[in-house]
Image 1 (cartoon, helix red, strand yellow):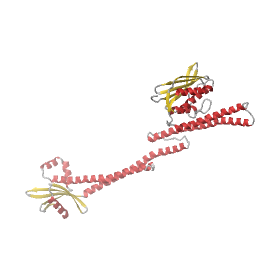
Image 2 (cartoon, helix red, strand yellow):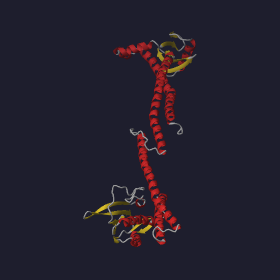
Image 3 (cartoon, helix red, strand yellow):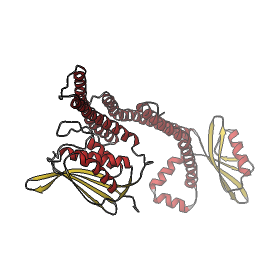
Image 4 (cartoon, rainbow, N blue to C red):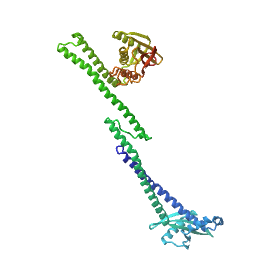
Length: 451
């Protein structure tokens, strides 16, 4: 059923409810109504006997309640009476001989004073009560009976009216099912069309967001996904443009220098200088390609902790500082201790290395590394005295550009690695006085208990 359309499922459900209702009416309600009417028939027969009774209390009660007296009087007109003795002599009333013989046989076999009977004569049912009367050492029998015509007419009329009622309810229910299915399927069809357009990268597709039910929640979730995908698509297009431009430049330099050298010309004055330029551009190209590959690697290994181990952040930072000291004439200051953390050593090295690489690029003369630790976290602050950053720029975004116009994956990689370790990273301008601001990147990486 789940493979059918929603309209078909709703209609089927409503039809199943209606069919169940009809079966219940035919089986349970009909039986209950028949039993109720049988009880009413026997009560009518008993009321007839009470109406004809010589009991003074009964007569007084009926006279005090004229409405009840008149009702029983009307009922008694539909009840027939027979009165016969034990020897079979009929004193009062008349009925078909076959019915009288059957009543007589049951009467003489009856032990109770009053008993209820039902018998079938031809195609008709007869309901009757036999009362045994002992008087002057003689036994007499009073029989009050009615034919089933009244009962059948009542049940037929009742079920005729109930049938029309069920038919009207069924038609109304089908209309309700159609309205409900249309109300549910229409926005779903719209959402389906919108999702199809999203799959085709058509981002300006409206969704039915005005609903407050689960369909509206689904639409809002899809719309949020659409907005995020639109941003990612725009960023990816920008990335492709930036990559094509930034990769094109070193490739163009390398080719032009190589062609010049092959023609016997040296753009940088001599062979050594020209080859050095080619090597620098190749290194730039290699760095950009390595960053792209590393992002893919992070996506692949996200959530994998099989290579995690205890990492000494202090030793790692001292090693990186020693390696970077010769890169530029910069004064380095390292103070404090960050301690040990549990993580993937190569990833943490790349994160700190990328921040140090940026700091060296922009620093004017000083880089400060301040380390600290708490019971739960290790804190690393890397500060440089380079020009302040534009804090409105999303520098940690995957496809953001630095102030030199180059596409930047470095800080994005930093953010991914720190967050994969359950930590946080931020970058801000620090006011150091004299209208001077330094740029500071701060890591906070959780430490496992016991380290």
